[in-house]
Length: 115
Length: 111
Image (cartoon, rainbow over all chains, first blue to last red; front, top):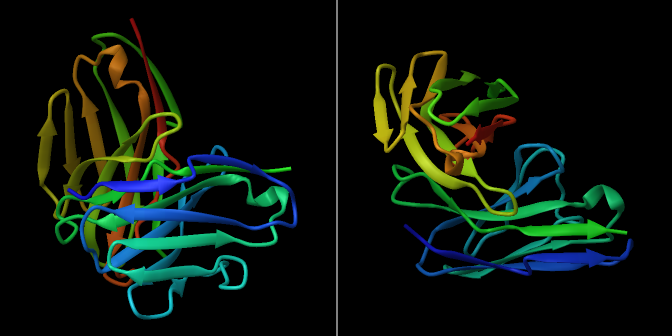
C-alpha cells in the first residue's frame, strides 16, 4: 500500500495566523483526502482533492478557511487559515489503496494547537 | 445520512480475556465497512474491509464479521500490545469515496 509522509507532525500556532500542512505520497494517486480529528472525537472528512481540479468540500467546511492545493498526483497541501483555538485538532491526509479493497491509507497526522 | 455507532466507548480486559467490539451502521448502499487501529499520536492503521453480510476476515488475534446492520471485531486471547483505539468506518454508494467514522472503542489490555 501507499506510504504517506505528512509535515509538520505537530505545531503550536498563534490565533489569527495560518498553517500549511504538506502530504507527500510515494505513488501516484487520483484522490487525496483531508480529515480532521478533534480532541477525543473521531475522524471527519474536510475535503477531497483531485489533481487538476478544485477540491470538493464537505458540509461545514469552506475553501476560505481550508484552502487545498493539489499540484500533482503525489502531493497536496491543506492550509488552516485565520486560526482560532477551536481549530486545535489532528489533521490527517489519506489516499485510497488498491481501489479501496485494501482500505484507505492515512498519514501520521499533524497535531495542531492554537493558543 | 450515513451513521456509524461503536460500542462500548472503552473496554478494559485482562490479557487472554476474549471479547468483541460492536459497530452498528446505517448507510445507503454499503460499499465497504472498514476497521482501523489507531495508536496514540499516530494515524489510523488499516485492518480489514468487509463488503457483504456474512463475510468474515481474520488477522492474528482479530476477526471481523459483518451483518446487514452491524459488524463485530472479535479479539481472541488479547495481549497488551493489542491496546489501542479501534475505529469502524463505512463507505456508501451515495458518499462516493468518503468514509464516515464511528467514535471508536478504546481498548486496554492489562498484563
